[in-house]
Image 1 (cartoon, rainbow, N blue to C red):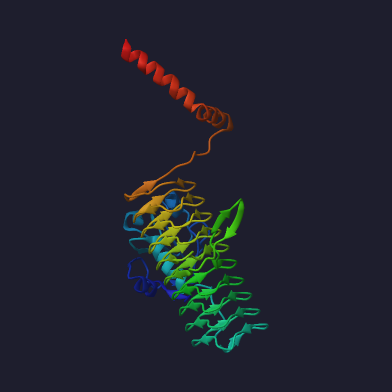
Image 2: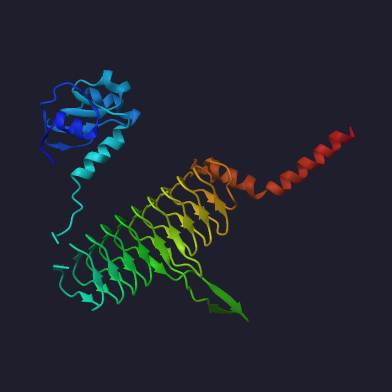
Length: 342
């Protein structure tokens, strides 16, 4: 994409130009480290003062911040979104040019169906009955199980393991080390011995889903685990069997979801949160980081739990109070009863 005239970049973004449109933009950088020839963006109000010392040739910003800018500006409603669109145009996340591109050591079943321009990296194993759409890219060391389907334009990065019968939609990205379709945690107790319950469902993933590194998504027990269109999941999350996640929900790193949980559309789940199984969370719910969700959430809004960090001495006092909360409650009730009698 670069170099590009600023006026052309403005046209691509459908934005409004302030200043010289003939400036040549050679790259994009943060507002702190940008230098002449580069474009940056301002979306964090805490960085407004950086505009005064910013060396970038142009800045993506909103109308309200234009008065602070001393360089050329590209005026947009959402500077961060505009930056994202530019980043997509210069994304270095690419693959070899085209199954003519099969790496060394690939084990490919004879009946695998491949679309056009499929790329398969070194030491990949693809089992029987697999269907790969056009422009699918399978990274080195990946394992694709029997009868799995992967939609057009999807990237499976290095060392991803996809079990049998999984269905993945179009234009997805699955980062390295992720496991999809492993058995759910299903056991019955027979005279103190654990008896494994076969997991007969699968995992269904919609279009434009992105899954971070080392995340695990378990297959359903009978019904399927379902990740809807547009969902984004960060690194090291665990999604248990029969979880259903509505479209365009965002899940930050380290989140743990127990089985048979249903999450609505357009939700945001903060990092390291733990969500109980067999409950429902409605659409448009935000759960802040480190929260523990134990029961249904039926109204949209922001929900939090957990104790924010505090000096150790204060935390120890708080812990003592919490440990004695029942005794304190009893004493309060006795005092209330005496006041009523008086």
